[in-house]
Length: 195
Ligand code: ZN
Image (cartoon, rainbow, N blue to C red; front, side, top):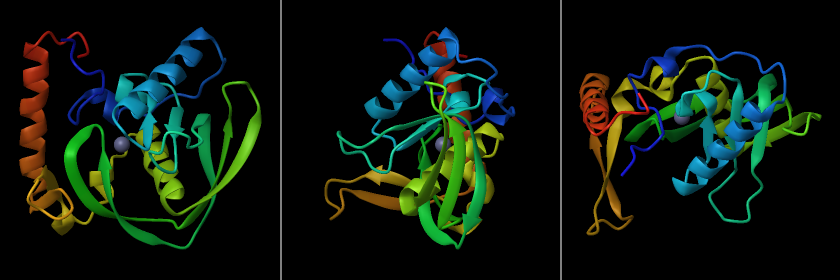
């Protein structure tokens, strides 16, 4: 089986600032399609270009994982206004199973271009605002663990005996780094075309 295409913490592309998209060419359209598919397959609420190894400023996002939810596909997104604050747990497909509490703006306005070339401004609150902030951070090589309160980092472990179907186990960034390094090494050993 091919290695999943999502880049894992420790991959240099996640720490490289992404570049402005200059032209809405086939490469960009193909990237948007792949990002949408990978986000949906993994039941994520957002994904940024670097997570698939691209250095282009492209994100996809949705306010929840329901099938008929509107998906935002944004090129060169940028936060032009932010207000208030919200606390909440975050995770990331590039840091599988890790969670941490991150303070974000409660409300943001995002300016972007659609894949069709239209300039748009989106006002978002709550989870969608959080997702936009998280994904635009990715384009600037910032990961949620950089912003998370250190004492809130934990592993989400599936647990059929727990009421919510999972339990949380405290961890540290050092332990998480070691686990993701092992995960990357394992994937590389399995055929590593993605790395
Ligand atoms: Zn992420």
